[in-house]
Image (cartoon, helix red, strand yellow):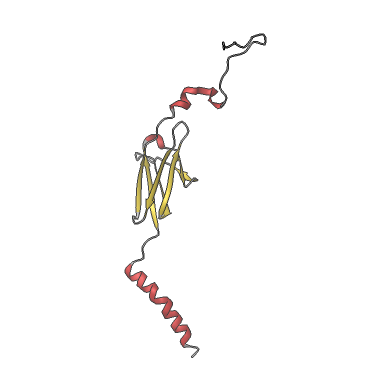
Length: 138
């Protein structure tokens, strides 16, 4: 009687595994490939707010990044200094791979501000200590 229990347990555990292998188990992961224009070289990649890598240009190819991720809904961000962040929310349920094309837009507001953009406070004209405030008529 003691010998049959382990055989039954092995059989019960082995049958679902064999069925899964024979029929093919659905993958729970996919490969995300992010491809960008030349200006995306060196841009940071963020998945759900976490930094996961950098776009890299190799040879004549466009800058790329690839990573194996769990299927589901993901927020993908591409960030680079001097450019507006690129953000896309994707939901992957059945694909084995997902390609995303990125084109970054220049942050012209930051460029227009120049070096003084580091200060968030507005610039004010110097005020003389003897100046008086204007009086508004009632």
